[in-house]
Image: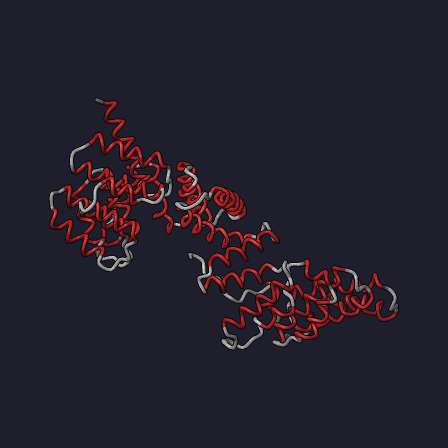
Length: 458
């Protein structure tokens, strides 16, 4: 996955900055505090004054973030809680401040607070850590095993189904163990409890996008895709300067077949962060903007390109029948450890078109030597090597995604055999399948458009 979460996620930002500083000279605020304190001392039944004092001391703590003001606030809320045990604001602040204190003192009586927590059902309806969770942040470094952490987090989400960070931490732990399905379930549950939490949505939708790619050829992903689209729209509106969210929205729009809108989002991402120019040039390829793609690659040496860019450059040249440039790029491509089966397969075809069959075979053997080739990919390779027929390749396909790739490689073989009518039919078949995120779809769409334009000219 693209995102790796830390297992320890603090539940309140205020927890991390409590200092043990001493109190110094009195200010006008302190004088007001003392006046309220005198009223509270002299009139024990004056709950209004006690409320005001509690609020005042809470503000002082939030301003100063030291242990002295924290203890004062806790003492005042403790007294107020005794008088108003059913006041939710009082209860929440009293409980929250004691959680914060545990970080300042590195101590927390889990058993005591667990009993308190069980007596206050209201706390389970609030996005705040239950006592059992505190065993994680206060534990000595590396003192807890993975199973112990998992057990604590499982109890955490059971004790408080509304504590979002409990779900996120447990989801991260399951992701570490490659149990992605359970991670997604936990994040989806957290999203239901906190529907506009951007931290959850950002992580959850990364998983969703990967899941959509995995399920694209096997099941209907429309519902999940629509939800992911809505979530990324929310995220880019909330964080308009976050380039990553714009690029993820571009990916989702491409999955939906909304290529122009996808390109718009990719341009926005690249304008915010130059690291996303790779994603933009890929989007230009999908849009059929050959000028932009040509300009991007003409200014770069093959050795300076990342492997994804290098693959795109090879396929771009194959789609445009630029056989020699594609072949030249293959010399660099086969040296990359993260090269793909398809880059090798389509790049080797450029050598065939140049009638360099021996080199095509050598490139194929070298490029595929250390790759894990799937059964369907082996069938494509068998066809490219003329070991099976077109009909046998089609018969071996198991879904529309396989068909898309089958028609594409068949079309390239038709070009070699100078069967241009058959070639055009194969490319039209690829486009009609609407496997939008596949490179074959983007390449075939460009080819069909070019062939129709050439026919119209003639």
